[in-house]
Length: 75
Image (cartoon, rainbow, N blue to C red; front, side, top):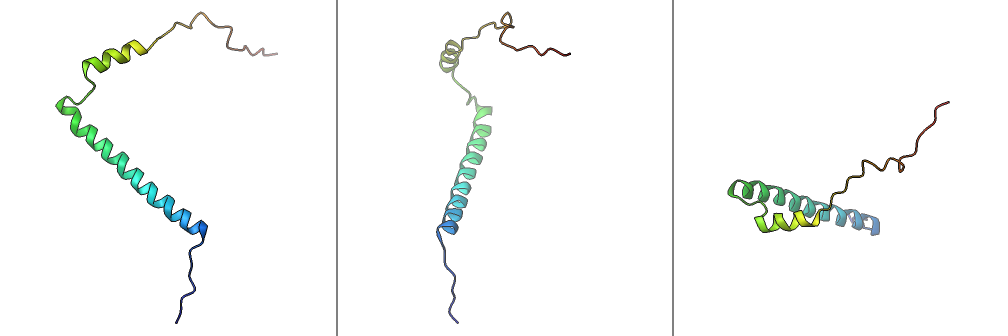
């Protein structure tokens, strides 16, 4: 008996999305495992990388700027 099944564009995009989601999940899982394996052996950022990251961060004290928060008057 012949089968009358077919895949339209919607079915194909769902299948493609599922396959891509599986690959993305595997990639994230592998990266997490790699970091867990690498961390005990000193696999963190090197001192040069940490110094470079410290120079990029510019913290400012915005505690004096209270005018940016609107006040709510309760009647």
